[in-house]
Structures are given as structure tokens and as C-alpha cells.
Length: 124
Image 1 (cartoon, rainbow, N blue to C red):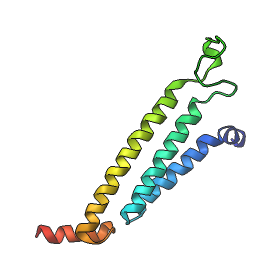
Image 2 (tube, one colour; image 1 turned 90 degrees about the horizontal axis):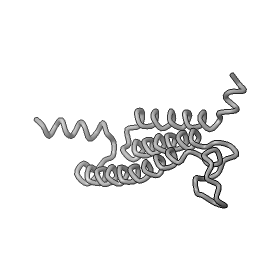
Image 3 (cartoon, rainbow, N blue to C red; image 1 turned 135 degrees about the horizontal axis):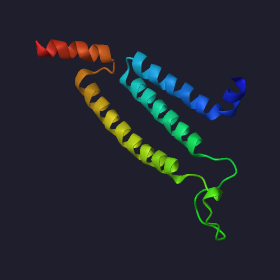
């Protein structure tokens, strides 16, 4: 098992990062820390996709010197997914931060428990 772990250390690091981000997302009460946890999870996913899409000894899929053989290039689909994911992640992060600012202006705290308590008091 140790040899497989060393051969796939990129995937192992991605899983560890995902676990760190997920636990941060679940256990933190501060909204900014939750957003950071979600961004760590995003980064871990991108690392995992990049590791899966890379093939040792191959180059980026840009035709150079008339080499058109498929065996010379890496798969471009994971790279495209990573780029698309980064754009979506930045947009989602911007939306979450803007909503966090609105919540802070209204409730003067970033603590989820305090905000939910204030919401329950407002509903009564």
C-alpha cells in the first residue's frame, strides 16, 4: 500500500486538502472561515482533476512540429474542467462574500449561531 500511496501522492494530497476544507466548512461558526473552507475544497478538487489528467512524458495538446499523434499529448478535458471550475468558484466566492457583508451590516456579527438566534427572535 505504501508504494501506491507514494505513486499517487498528488491524489492523496488532494484528498487530505478536501478533508481539511470539509471539516473547516462543517466545524467553523465564522462565515469567512466557512468560505475559506469551501475554497480549500475547490482547490483540492482542481488538484485532483489536474493529477488525473496529467500523463508523464506527454505535452500540452498544442500541435507543434506537425506531431498529430494522440499518444504525444495529455487529455485536454480535465484542464478545461479545471479552468471552468475556477471561473465558477470565483463567482460563487464573490457572491458568498457579498452576502456575508450584507449579513454583517444587518446583524453586526459573522457568527452563524448568533445570526440564527437573531433570525428566530425576528420571526416571533
